[in-house]
Each structure stands twice: as C-alpha cells, then as structure tokens.
Image (cartoon, rainbow over all chains, first blue to last red; front, side, top):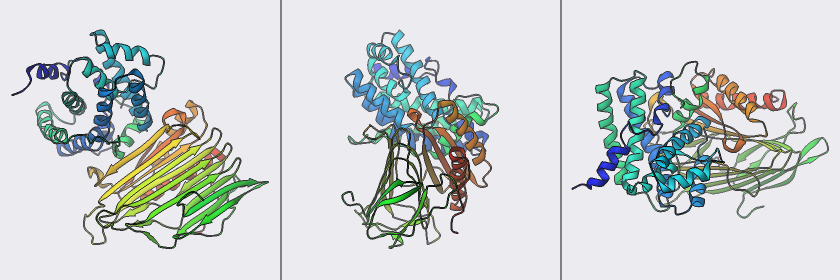
Length: 225
Length: 272
C-alpha cells in the first residue's frame, strides 16, 4: 500500500512540467555523445547507471540528506559551501547552482518557508544554491519525506539525462521509455541501500567531468553542461 | 619530522639557489642527489624519490611531508610507477602526503602513477596548503594491472585531495571511494588528476583552461580537460586513457604547458 499524499507529491515534483530549470543541462550526455562515447542505447544506459552509482548515490544523495535534516540557515550554508568545494568542474558548479536557483525560486513563490528564507540568505553569495542542497530543503518544505526526496532527486536526474539524449537525437521516444525502465531498476537498487550515518560525499566520474569541461571548446552545443 | 613521517623534506631559498634545508627520510624512502636543471625558475631544485621496497604492500603506512619555503622552488617526482600489491583481508595500505607552500614558493609534485594489483586496498590522502602568492602543481594518477591477464581489480581505493590556504578550511576537495571502475565506455583504465594552485585572475584562468584543454585533445589515446577550480584557486585537470603511456603523455604535456605559461620556458631535460 502506498502513501497517497506522498505519491501525488512525487508525481507533481517529478513531473517534467514542474518548472525546476533542469532542461538546460545534460550533465555530460551532450559532450560524451559528441566525443563518440555513447554509440548505442546500451552505452547510454551504462552512462546513466554510472551517473547514478558513482555520483548521485555517493554524492548528491548524501548532501541532500544533510540539507534535508539541517535545522538552521547556517547549517545549510555550510553544506552548500562543501558542495561547491567538492565540485571541481566549473560548468558542473555553474549548472548545479543555476538549477538550484531555479528550483528554490519556484518553491519560494509557492510558499515554501525554508526555501524563501534560504533564497534571501544566499542572495549575496554567488557560490551558494547548489541543486542537491536546494532539493533537500525544498522537498522538506512541501512535506515530502526524506526517502521520497531522494527518489525525486534520483528520478529527476534520470529523466533529465534521458530527455537530453532524446533531444540530441541519440534515441527515439520509444527507446527513451526503455532506457527509463532500465534506469528505474538501477535507481531502485540504490535507494534500497540506506545511506550510512558516517557517509562522506564523494564521486568518481572522470569521463563525465572531462566531457562537461570540454563544453566551452565545442562550437555548437545545446546544453550548459 | 612530523609524527610517523618516513619522508620529510624542507626546501628553502638561499641566495640564487633553492636548497634542502631539511632532509629526513627512512625506509622505504630513498633520496637521490638533487639537481638544478631548469632554466626557469633557475633556482628550482629537482628531487627524485625512490622507494627501497620497490612496491607498496597491504600493511604499509607511508607518510610524506614536503614544505617549500618563501621564494623557494622544488620539483619532486618518483623513480617509477608504484605497484600497490594485494592487501590481506582487513588490511589497507595507507598513504598520507602533506604539502605546504609559503608565499612566493613554487612546488611541482608529480609522482609516477600507482599501479593497483588485484585485491589491493589503498587509502590515499593528499593535503595541499598553498599560501597566497605561492604556486603548486600536484599530480595523482593510477591504473590497474592483473598479472594473470584477466579483469581482476583492486578491492578498494579511497582517494582524497584537499586544497586549502594555510590554516583555512578546504576550498577544493577531490574525493572518491570505489571498489571497481565505472562503465568501460572507451575502455579507459588509467586515470589522473592534476591540481594547479596559482594566483591568476578569472579571465586568465579561463584562457589557461581553454588552451590546455585544446592541447590535451592532440594527445593520442587521451581524453582530458582542464577547468577552473572552486574559490579561484587555479585549475583542475582530469585525464583518462586506455593505458598508462597516454596518461603519462597527458601529464607531461600538462606539466610542460603550465611551466611555459607560468615561467616562460619549458622545463629542462630530465635524465632518461
């Protein structure tokens, strides 16, 4: 039996129509496609699994949990600064902050109290507002539980990656649904494993980092990351 | 020597030369003769580290400290790739490197890559503190090797690089903890990162990133890019390759490119 209220919240916040600013980012898909590393749907699905396993689960999910549990603006700021320090690629930092600022802007306008307070608090510091931190505080604002917030974070990443691949012409709409189903299984397995209490945020995605950092050198590109 | 350090080097500026004011080492480290071989900075002292053991074993705990004083310049490398052998269950090889650079100091710390053997367990940590006005280029790289010719991999590999100003909180943190490699798209099995800490304005750092990224694209078999680090620290460089040769070529290109960018000329020739 599922929780009806949580499920409806997931459908709303996980809907691609929810204005969270994610459409400008491919998180490395565009670059890896351009550099010939995603020649097939299988390779795309391996890449999505890498994103989820070697970055989202060990990095975003850990930081989101900390932000979700944080009780003060100072605590959230500290987590945001840590996220900045841990994100070595400029375009990833910029993309994360842009997406985070879009999400917190919408949440603030929709009456999210923590979102509103943190949006004002961070307004003078351009290095704050990372997406995963904002997800933690915004989803709590709207009564979403931490497990559901983690699911939303992982799933919106998956849909963003698959959407980017579709818009770039790497896969068709039917293939996209198949890739979503494959990614769903990977995400479900990851979500079933709890985050250890002493987990420290870390990631190992060198190819994605390189593809994103090579972005400014590309003559034509559709996405910011 | 800091507690537990088997290698403790202190480079100091003395007139027109950089000298080793502190030179303490014990097993397994061996220090060969130091040389002045670079046209610029002309006072730079180059040192090659060797390990008498020839390899790193499961129960080893290796601690290094290198400090570069005000106005001094040092280039530190190692004799060859360091093999990290199998660790018995419950054991974990530990490596700790602490690097300190004073104002006006310059350090290039570019050890050869590690080669992780099947069932190796490694916990490596580098702490880099560079004062305003100091400069550092630090490299960290690894590959895998299965002597049986199979696909066996290391048991665990945790790596952490912290970059900070002296006494401050880390401003850049590169951390991973893996027990296998991610997707094999492209067949990459050799990976490296370099960290350049240098005082340059944002525009200059962006130009440096673009130029170095373009140069790395010319190296056969290498996938690499440079990107500005957080907090205006400098540049972070990521390299990936199918084998060690291309990774070494990428590291050498990065070093030579940045030496010319920062000091105006390429490095002097090293003993082959």
